[in-house]
Amino acid sequence: MSDTIKVLGISGSLRKASWNTLALRAAIRLAPEGMEITTAEIRDIPFYDGDVEAESGIPEAAVAFREKIRAADALLIASPEYNASMPGVLKNALDWASRPPHQPMDGKPIAIFGASPGATGTIRGQAHLRQTLANVNGLVLVQPVVAIGNAAQRLDADANITDEATRKFVADMLVKLADWTRKLKS
Image 1: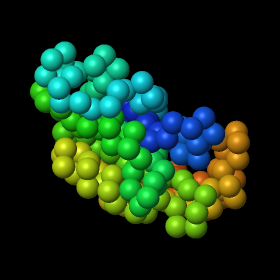
Image 2: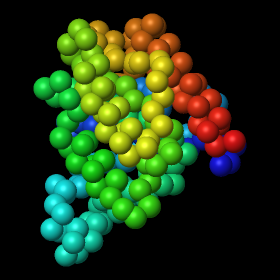
Image 3: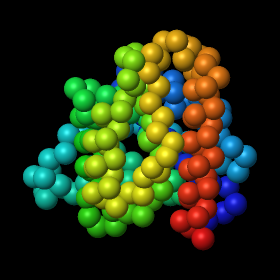
């Protein structure tokens, strides 16, 4: 690992005006010195289909996503909560990424967070996301838990966190991710 920690940011939402995409963009601005965050799109990854995989292999969009994960030192996932879980599109992308051989999330440091218009943020969705990532041996940062509730009062349309406490939570999470990544890679 170079001195710069390369983090791959993933939004679990496809909406252009997604609170989670805004939160991810805000997090990029808060990255501590020595951390570089780039993003990956999951929009073009087809539905997982074992028959397609058996006949044609892993689709090109999923291969590209896997390679971005592999090249990163750590992952930062901003995910909404749909029906008390993570969105299907995110689960689908993670399912493709987890296919053998050389599953790229194995041993990868990961921080997760989310934003929601509701008061409780994305706590229940994060629980399912943690469960999925643990199953592929992703090393998910346990603390701090960052669930941005009432997102309209904490984020603006330009991807700025307008609430100081929320900004501090996100910044602290990124510092912890950097420390966690360095510790795991040393």
